[in-house]
Every structure is written in C-alpha cells, then in structure tokens.
Length: 497
Image 1 (spheres, one colour):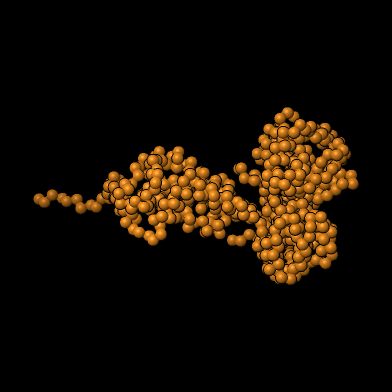
Image 2: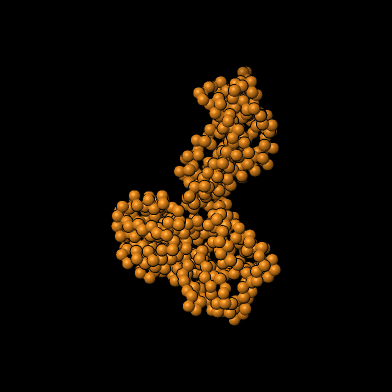
C-alpha cells in the first residue's frame, strides 16, 4: 500500500515570517543606499542633523507662533505637544522594547554618512516619530500649515534611511507612532472643529456681498492694517474709518447714525465700546479682531478677516448675551468678563508696562508683581454676610477648561453668569493658582464657582477697582452684575463641514 501523503500547505511559522520581513527590509535599505538622488547627498544629512533633539521642529513652531493668527499659534502648540508625547513614548518604551542594532554603513556612500553616528538602538526611528507627530499635530489644527510642513517631515524621515542610520521599517514604525501620538493629544485636548459651535440662536441677517451698508471703525492702535486692507478689497462698497484710540467712541457714534451694520476692528476694549453703541442704536455688530487677546472674537469663531468676510457675504448672524454691571452712577457692559479683587490690579499693571514691553510680557510681569505685593482681600456682603475675597470673577457665559488648554466658551447665549470666587485667607498666590486650574463648577475652602443669572454685592469699599473686558473703573457701595439675554446680534461664520 502506498502511504498517505500530506499535501496540506501550511503558512510559514512566525520565525520564518520574521526572517523574510527582515530580509526584505535589508534589501530595501541596500536599494536606497545604492540609489543616487541629485542634490540630496549634502542636503539630507544636514536636514537630518537639524532635527536632532527636535531643534528643527522647535524652530518651526516658533515661526508659527510668531504669526498673527490664533490658528497658527494653536497649531504650533499642538505640534509641540504631539512631538513631546511621541518622544517620551520612544525613549521610555520603543527603544527599550526592541533592541535592534543599527544597519551596517558599508553600502552607504561616505558623503551621506553622519559625522556623529547615533548610539541608541535602531527601532523605531525617533526622528521619524517626531517629524510625523509634529506635522500631524499641526495639520489637525490647521490643514493649510499641515500641508506646508508635511514635505519637510517626509524629508526628515527619508533622510534617516538615506544616511544609513535606520532601516525602512524603523522609519515606518516611528512615523506610525508619531501619528498616533498626535491623535492621542487630540483625544485629550480636542481641536476647535471638534468642539460645539457657539453660534446660536441664528437670526435673519442682511447679506452684504459687496459690503454696502457696513461702516467699519478701525482702531489704528491695533496695528492690523493688512486685515483692514483685506476687508476693503473683499468688500469694496463698505465704508472704513480709521482713527486713533482716543477717537474710537466718537467715530463709532457717528458711524452708527448712517450704518446698516456697525463694524469695529480692535481689541476687546474697543469691541466693548462698539457693542455699547450698537445696543443703543439697535444695530448688528461685525467684529474684526485686532487686539492682543480678542477673547470675544475668538469665542465667536471670528479668527481673522476671512471669517468675518464670509459671514458678512453670506449673512450669518447670531444673538449673544451681554453682561451689565452697575454701582450708583457707574455702569457698563461686558462681553467677556468683569472682576473685582486682585485681577483689576493686574490689568492696571499690564496697561502700565505693555507700551514698553508688549502685551504678553506685560501680562506676565503684571501677574508676578500683583502676586508678590502685600494686598488686603476685598470685603463684600453677599446674601447678608460679609466675605473676604481675593478675587470675584463673573463671566458672560460659562468658561470651560480642556485639560491645560486655555479656557473658552461654547455657548454665548446660555443666560448665565459664570461666577468664581477665591476666598480671603493666607497665601493668596496659591489660592489663585489653584482656582485657575479648577473646573467650571467646583467648591473648596479656597475657592468656589456657581452659575447664576444675577449677582448683588453690598458694602464694597470706596475706590474698589472693577475690571471689564480689559478696562478698569472704580465702584463702591452696592454692585449689581446681571445678564441681558440675547441682547446683541453679531455676524459669525457658520462651521464648514
């Protein structure tokens, strides 16, 4: 009898499959070493060295952060955060898990080889991980900047094989890890397009395809002539009035008498003045950000001239709440926040130093000076009881904090004041910092946060400072803070999908 013959085809074992993959990896490496790309023999090694310790990406992030748009600054921050996570993962897990030796340099021409060869293990490529993480993080926040940076990131990854310090699979694994790190960061801190839109409720608004009926008053102290010129080019029938900061209120009143839509270009203080004029005249408001912070425009979704132009041309408008404060004959409105305690002191210090050293450095210096100064807490009567307070903050709408990301509002018409207080006591700096990192609704012996429609204080000492939208005034006696629900109509672009 003929014995049975087993003709079953079995897949190769894991060791055979691994050996085949490694052999293919080596062949690809040797093919890359044998290939000559004109101009790359000197360029790619230099590019590879420039990416050591993330120096190339730090310089790129600095250039992005120096841009005027908040989107580019967010893209830089997200790119660096993604890079940091990828590098930490590579150094703590990746290099220690797979101790693969570096490829031999024999097939690599001497001109391509790095002067200093890396001494760590080969798998995965840290340079590829950092490049992919940074580029992906930037792209998740700004597609335009991501497209611009992607070729540079790809060239850095390619250079690691071209210079002979990594196998192709090292680079692919590192790039995949970098992309994963960027998406992990997005899971912790969502991008703006993942967050709820602050644009509700919508109202019928005039579309101004050529800008006819818009009178825009631009604060020349904002230093944004390119934005004003872009608006003028896109909306040729709009009237644009440029004036000095001291003339803003007067020019806004004149503009409101002939405008169909009142426009303003400036920071939060200038926008506050324009909002008060628009409310008195019953006009819709168009805001073009032109200050240092631009909190209201940012939360509204208007980050630059393109956003505002699109909203005006399409007639996209929403109603938003307005906050109001009053104390005797002193009264005013706020679109962002008003506060009593140490924060108004910080605003005064910032305004004192900003003409000399700039807005952001002045804010940091002001915070340091205020926290180190020997202040006494504010004393105010709330609900029949007197309380010592280091800070009382009232936000026009609830401010949310996403991890360590800056606070912002998702809903500009929620009808509530976001009230946060830091109780008086020892170590005010520690209490203030703890409150700054707390969530929107928290209570502790040091600080508390609630949402209310109206707040009334009594027994406020004469000369007490109140800050509102970056401006400062004095209040005393009774202070009332309340909401004006859906009082102001403003243009804002609808989200693009």
